[in-house]
Length: 149
Image (cartoon, rainbow, N blue to C red; front, top):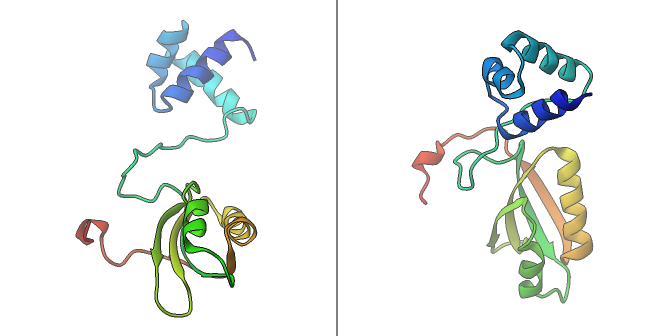
């Protein structure tokens, strides 16, 4: 990798949708030469993909897996302490205090099953959850635009 490749990577970090002609102009190459370098960086595994970064409040979930986690707190666990401990967990979108066999219903968004497993372990080891029951959302049936805000 040379200086031009490094500059290309820096530009693509900021704008992964830039045209090859604009990318080439920014680094002093033709569109074809810039495209060839990007394809080589992809083939070599330096560039492994492109993604959309969503604005906060976006109507789409920020991650790949949406789940609902019922939480039962351990005997003697304090509700305020539980809420304080989960407040800084970015995967938890919402927490609702519930009636019935579980204390809370958490609405979570995680990249995949490994991240969900990590979140569940964290809830049990550090947040006072004694038991969890997880349900994974398969698809939406009511458009988000029709949901009350």
